[in-house]
Length: 96
Image (cartoon, rainbow, N blue to C red; front, side, top):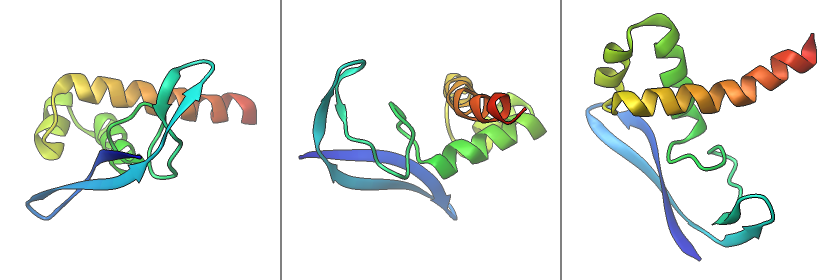
């Protein structure tokens, strides 16, 4: 088991992390990775709720406002948008 850690939504002024024992598995596509967990996307260091909030903020505010509110680097905002769109875009494409 591996102690894995994901950034979660802040609790007031406190930065929050979700920690869990997560086994490593061998994936034929990605190699050795932490097993799937329901609260985070593949290869993400953030929870789904955190990603969703950042993605929403990116559509409603500037990237700098999103980085300040979520206390993350601007590159992280870009990575999150890419990850969320990869999943959401597929659902949109398949529903049309």
